Length: 166
Image 1 (cartoon, rainbow, N blue to C red):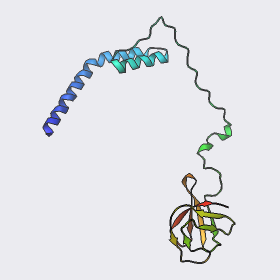
Image 2 (spheres, rainbow, N blue to C red; image 1 turned 60 degrees about the vertical axis):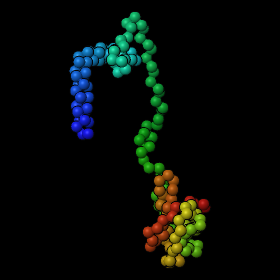
Image 3 (tube, helix red, strand yellow; image 1 turned 180 degrees about the vertical axis):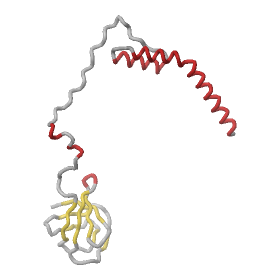
Image 4 (cartoon, rainbow, N blue to C red; image 1 turned 180 degrees about the horizontal axis):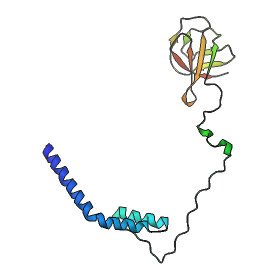
């Protein structure tokens, strides 16, 4: 079976090489002819003709050149704004730390987290975790991708997705 495949492959390659060798000089001449066309649209049509049917579509010399296509105007930008799109949004810190002041036994069932700094956050995922640590643990809320926030509690390696409600 491998011999048949190898023989077929060799036959196909030899036919392709012989066809390319026969077409080589004519193809090179056609490409050179297209290269000399001044009008960009006509030059593109010439190259397309070579690719599609093997014949260069030379422009009619009597035809008037088409009007050049105007480039789209670039929006006027403030030079001071150039390149700032790559700078991270200036929306504040990437994380906050504060103690949880309400009774905290973990999370589950849309738990509410009231922080010492006055912020109130609600659980938005379905994770469940039972906490057995100190009464008012230090919580860290980190900004994540796509506007998500994750809350973690000191002394654990668990996080829960949250949304600020106050």
